[in-house]
Image (cartoon, rainbow, N blue to C red; front, side, top):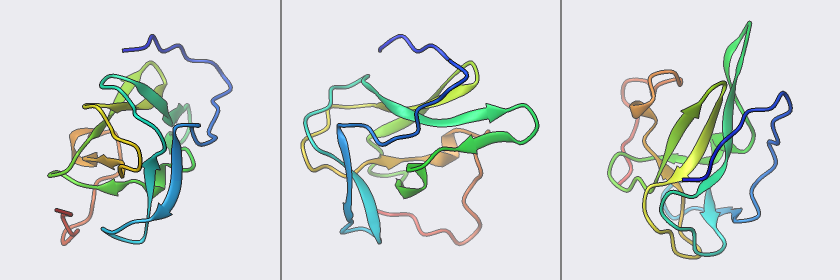
Length: 116
């Protein structure tokens, strides 16, 4: 995995390896543009604000939640969370994250649909 270092300025722009498009699962999703190898740090997702706690960076609200098709995870290093590939991703593959594995993050409400 790439070494991660925190700085006061966090770049919240979308990674060059990702794009937004219509999801066959639900609404719009975040997709890989090119192959992404297992363990690749794709982009920052959240930073910890001293007063407000974890702040979600745009475009992270676009990920679809999935416990079944998860292909990325959120990794915390100091005051920043990062999106990391947990397996090789193919071009045009939708990004899925299981938010319930990171209890620092807002959790899905009861009745949340589990995507298959």
